[in-house]
Image (cartoon, rainbow, N blue to C red):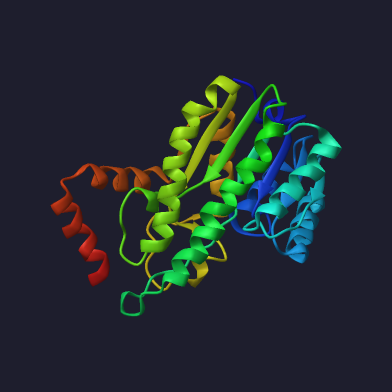
Length: 262
């Protein structure tokens, strides 16, 4: 097994949603290796801040390019990937991480919320895959990585929209793992539990097994290096949800009802 430095050195890597949270933590962690990073998000100023933090590290070795754009727009994904293709000709690792979270108020059921999350979380990833695949096929060590969530395992109350987008991603990547194998593209789906980010800071409920974005980035990069098809963490939380998903549906409902009570 190569070291992290050996594995990531020389790689061309695209990270979406790199302006904050796990995406920023991944960019910072990867900046210590002599790789080429392409960072994308809607907010150019926040991307500049990510770049500044990366370069402030005395051990920074990465070459960093910023390609801002609204990833929920198909043509902007294509424009970003066209720029990478012109500069590099290939892409080794695409980490499609961009996304957001909103919760459903069952007394004000809002279809616009569902569409908004589906566009930002799921369709943005589909557009990213479509645009990145030609370049990944030019790599001898291609990996496609998608950010799902442990919310994909269960129908958690208030996460009807968010969980649906993450379940769609989870299902899509299980299929892609098989479909992309003949093209020598390895794929991994990431299923985090609660991670301390700007998004989770807005939560008003208890978040069990909360970990830092830095810890999440370390786990993810280890999983990518080992080509794990599913990278889920923290294990004490993710395995608990997996266990509940195997229970009879009536028992699942009773356990999930307690989340409403609490």
